[in-house]
Length: 470
Ligand code: ADQ
Image (cartoon, rainbow, N blue to C red; front, side, top):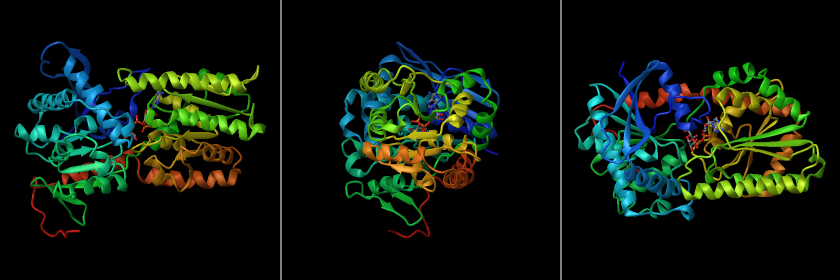
């Protein structure tokens, strides 16, 4: 069997108190099976040119990390990745900014990744690159002579061409993506949006019936591989951790109030401000619920070097304080807002205690929290997922979630009220339908499907034979 080589910006071997984020959760599960090499940034910056990769072993995974030059890192990460790409990929040009020096740093870092990775590669490695920070890595690997099949998975959404066009030199990005053999995205609409970019007259590519694209002299596959979760692990953790003293104390403090839970990285794409306002609307429009519900939002800060993230952090603190000031009673605090990461096992137990999972991003590639919430429920008395239509997860979970538009404050409040008052039989039925979907497409199936697709690639850039133009 070929060795799996995964490359991502960060290599997140779990440490307690650290929030792993969706990409790391998915990759850790992938490595559980077959081990392999995980390559990425060490988390350290240096003043001069970074040295070769440091390699260590954790279980069956070899971890190779490199440092990055301080200025390059600023331009690559906070700059191009998170001020330019992240907002555009999330359909939010309002947050977009661009500089040529950031753009250049982004490409320089990707070239450095390629140069430092190549000496570690073996003949039949399956190379799987992850996420928007590393779009150009495939091309950089080709430039230094790698002709193995290369896979890429985008964890975030892909917008339409009209949004992508905001990015200066977007053609270079599309060309770089064409260096991979399999390009995976979360949902079919993302795949369609990406394929359509190649069909634009200025790009001049072709899209074939089987999802393959021919552009820039290469043929590659663009397909949806919706990421899943380890359903069994969530279920087990949620049950095993219910008796932890911390969880028990928390349960006592709820005093039988219905718990609404939100768990997200603190990011403007997660729609937290709107979510807080929707909860306020619930308390306004359904006064009988005051004192009978408790909303807990867990949101550890991320990307604090990016200005927009500091602003949203301040705004949320104010909004939570505002709502609590307005509605709190001596024995009831409407919102418990916690700004830190928790370990997975505790989170899963908290999910199980919550009668409502509130997941309302204004855009999200998939959203694993929505799936983890469902998997952690007690099937005999499950809670209800209130889910944004704008999360990738809404496509699979429409069979059982209460779907809402996060911009519609009254609509989210209605969804919450519906979830809170939903009869047991309906809750069970909705939960059963969602669990079936999650089990069918769990994290192992996701990994297998992608790696099978990559393994099937033979003759890199081969000309399509029996394909029909569309
Ligand atoms: P994220 O934007 O990080 O992921 P998400 O999919 O919800 O979003 O994954 C977050 C993960 O981190 C979950 O497993 C969650 O349990 C964990 N987590 C969140 N807050 C935490 C906290 N306070 N403490 C500990 N753990 C916490 C990106 C994309 C998503 C996509 C994933 C996976 O933005 O759309 O679903 O990658 O592809």
